[in-house]
Image 1 (cartoon, rainbow, N blue to C red):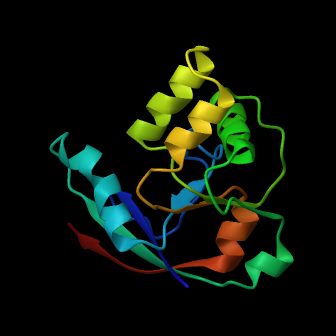
Image 2 (cartoon, rainbow, N blue to C red):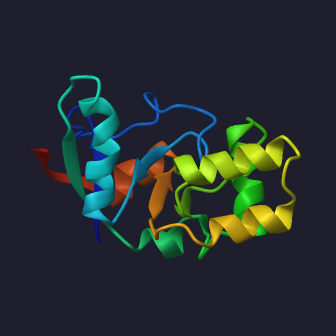
Length: 157
């Protein structure tokens, strides 16, 4: 499977050392199988007058059977709870790979409304169901990155 990562620089050797904590699926290296989504991720760097670079990787899907993987098929209460735990620094899971929808700005606004008690869980899930499809794969261990994710090329966007 081909995966993409949008950044301001080429990343030939992905690692967790440079990743941020308290994001959607916790500390990890984030990729997507959707090229247009990786290009969109570059937008925040381009707005800061940096280059946008999409790095491309070959992902060995044997990892699904050999690693501890969590897949969120849709925005759901389980997905919401996971995002909330990761974003608040309370995630204690030990997944190697987590896959599912992106908490983009609209999603994050919904999450914030829920956090602040302004909407309930049902309303939050209903709002999330209408988001444009997207997908992210977060690699949360160095061992998985080294064994299953292999740099192929990059391009400026």
